[in-house]
Image (cartoon, rainbow, N blue to C red; front, side, top):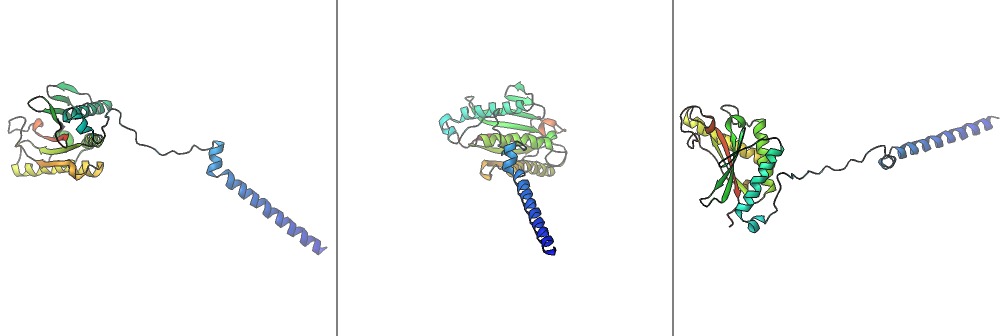
Length: 235
């Protein structure tokens, strides 16, 4: 009798173990990613691709030699304009380009009216806190658009100049203007991967290149200028 009980208990243990194994296998299968996708329980995560900036457009390497400098820069000019307008900037047409609150996009032409460079002017009061060289969030947003343009049009380089008004000691203003221009360069280089070779000139000029000839605090004289041109002139 005791033998029969022992056999019964052994059989029961084997049955429970077998059932547990099947349940584990079943749970493992139903929770697998393959089964979940099959039954529609989850949606597969697809890799996110960076969308092309259709407003800005782009040109591949070699386009400069095919098009020449002026047509190349004309396409860049229109692309930057559309990119800004697409993000909500409203430009006003002026004699030498476009003007908006905090930023200007100007055309630099030769005596024959051929486009040779683009000039982006960022209002100093928008770009930096008073007396400092730390970029504001708005300045970083504007610089990001310039970086996008340089990336989309790879046969370009840039020159950066910092400017102050005439209030305060000249040497302090000169240092401040230089620090600000290098802050813009650092943002382009380190945050947006614009390589060193694409910076032709980075400097500060204090009040030596005034727009308005005054010794007073003048908003137009406080500015950061970024010139974007082609790597060479092609006719």
